[in-house]
Image 1 (tube, one colour):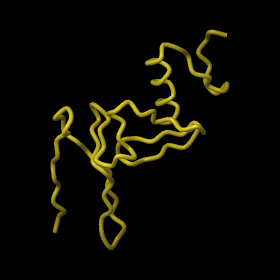
Image 2 (cartoon, rainbow, N blue to C red; image 1 turned 90 degrees about the horizontal axis):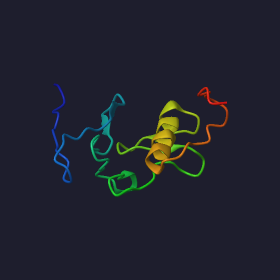
Image 3 (cartoon, rainbow, N blue to C red; image 1 turned 135 degrees about the vertical axis):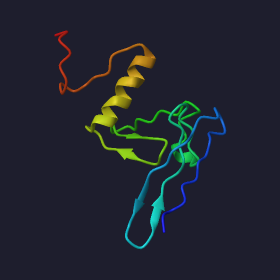
Length: 102
């Protein structure tokens, strides 16, 4: 028997939502639904649609699907770079990436 896939639209922007799921052998664990367009999550802790900063004080980042990206991971770096672009500045990358500017 195949699991039923439930489609859900975002209550804020009406885009199609997604969620992560994992089959642990005795059942399937589902993460919260999240919207890739506006950052909404059905779990308030991961809801980024209100402008919550996904980057924590250690440099890791959460996503709207209930995931955590540890400091130094490519996704955490991407969130830090996006935050800097939105703020109009340049993030401190800790010497890990050279951009050719010195």
